[in-house]
Figure 1 (cartoon, rainbow, N blue to C red):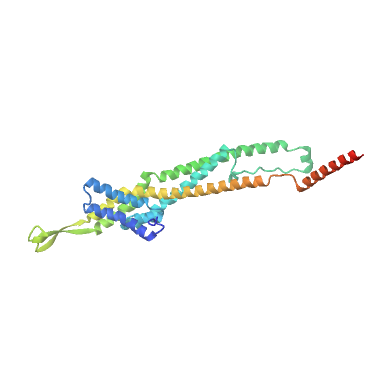
Figure 2 (cartoon, rainbow, N blue to C red):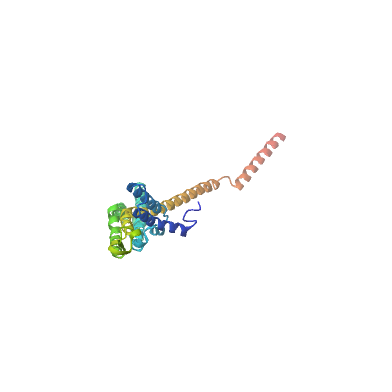
Amino acid sequence: SMSNSTAFPLASAHARAMSPSIAAVAAALGAGTSAAGAKASESSIRRQAYEKAISIQDLVTCVPASYREHLHEHIQWTADMADKLAKCMSSLRKLESAKADSVTPSHLLLKVPVLQACKEYREYGGGLAAASAIENAVADAQASVLDAAIQHKRGEKAYLEALLTPEALLDRYKNPVNARWSDLRERSKVPRFSYVGGSSALQNTDVTVAEWVVNPVVIKEYEDLLTDLYPIALRAITIVEMKEYALSAKIEKKKAVAKTADVEMAEATKPGPSIQSLVDKSVQGRVKQLEAQIKKVS
């Protein structure tokens, strides 16, 4: 499709960046047939913008401009933690699979010490009991090392998952947003006028400022962003998971192709009769024919 972000990245990014702001303006101006309908409509506009983000930079662009720089590092942090969690889970699966198959990963393989002894003592058979004891000790230790490695990865997985719970992410995101809101609230006030000489602009002869109020659009933008904080974080996680899934699928495909190639190569290189054996067999057959003819003549 010519409308995706890869075809027109700048245009798509601009559209995503505008969507949350457009939703806030529409709501502040009372767009929609009802309050519930307007809220559902603007929420849909924002969520669609987030869902169309296919990279972390795309997602950051979706955040309202007033808060973008304040959330950028936290969105990137979320993606980094999600990436580390995906790699941790991959390592854990490999370790658990190795244990199930009774295979020790190369990076955990323990080396069996070799005891030194003179030639005569070795020929005599001395040290066999000690060598056997060492091998048994290393085998027991090897199993313990693998179990410890699995427990280590499980602990890392639980730690990273705790960092990415909805509660933890909301706490992390709302603090910079609230800090920014405190500043914007004081800098985004607009005047509320009072007409002089009448109750409307048509009868107005002058205006006075009745009070200064925080811009309703700015208020709505802040309230919407608070609602969207976890969906934004979740989208960052999803973007990473999609990339990991695509990479995993690519690796598995390469493994399958390599396995097929190995099978075909094995079939093609199966040992068969050599040229020499074929020649010998042909000569032996010819000799037998000649022997038979000689017997008939004699």
